[in-house]
Length: 277
Image 1 (tube, rainbow, N blue to C red):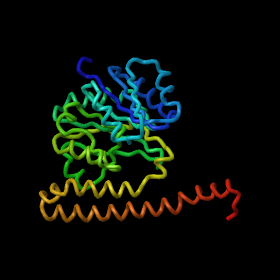
Image 2 (cartoon, helix red, strand yellow):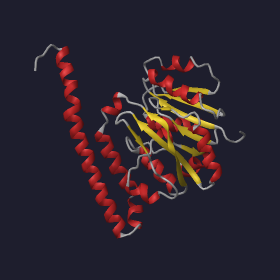
Image 3 (tube, helix red, strand yellow):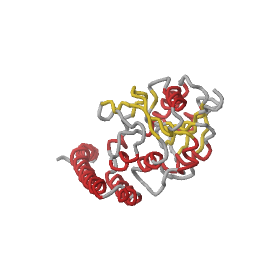
Image 4 (cartoon, rainbow, N blue to C red):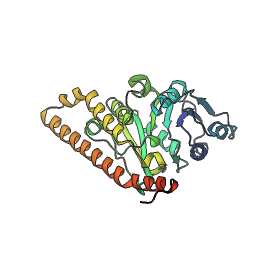
């Protein structure tokens, strides 16, 4: 439909074996007024070859000369996107509902106050369906709670970017939550209750950088500290208790990952070096 073009931005780095699946899932959408913007973060594998193999004029490929990070890549895609709607898709995730984009546009049509539409998704890491449950005005909810919103599920209106700006590149982690919160201060949210995205399982997800997550968590609270205080003493106290509990959980998870996930890696390294435990 006229005025309903969707720009799907896919940042990628050395994941050509997953990227093909991600791109294909977008091309198979029932809503075909799309452009796919692949931002290659200086990959050293056959990423460019995979993109070119589709031979589809709706696919735009850009490559960074050096590593810049996912934030930079998403912002680079936003700067050249021509769609009235913007969607993000990580290279190891994919759309499993061919009507995802069409359904999300339908929600935007029904409610002009919406700036953000997500969806339920299936997380392959924990083998579980996740429901973000974000409907209406959710700014206070997002201020005190890091929700189950997955970046690969979302669609936003172009005007959102024009009003709130790009992703904050000072964040090395949790930048998406900062982005979602800034949107929620001006717009209402909604989401598709059915699973529309599969969150893929990759090695980088297993070995999550807990240090960066903690820094991102602290940076978010520092950046929006004034908003916490404006809500009053009781809200502020509750938010700070959740903040410190969240830090504790990040630290606990970090210790767990270090203890239980690094042992197999160490064992494999010892085997290669022919060292007996």
